[in-house]
Length: 111
Image (cartoon, rainbow, N blue to C red):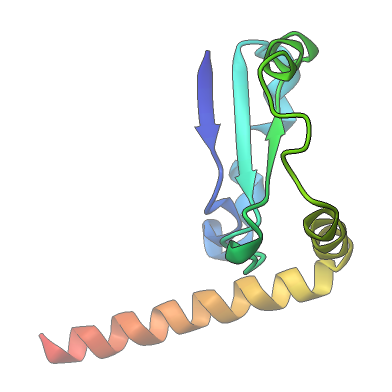
């Protein structure tokens, strides 16, 4: 099994990181698991929420060992709202990239 962690994918390629995602070719690789998190680009670190994408076979094996109530109802509602608000996600990613550039420039000035 190969695990691909896409926690920071939204920040890659100038905010167009999904163009580098493994998700479009996942079906051709039944031994691959792709992980995404709401902690980074969605700014929901306190929610401790993520997504897993894999083949039905892999997911079937994982379901045998997962806790039956691993995500509470409020966290699920927050995650669903975040997924629906694409404009806010774009703003968060753009702002983070801009601030990263500002910090890098300031640090560069310090030598």
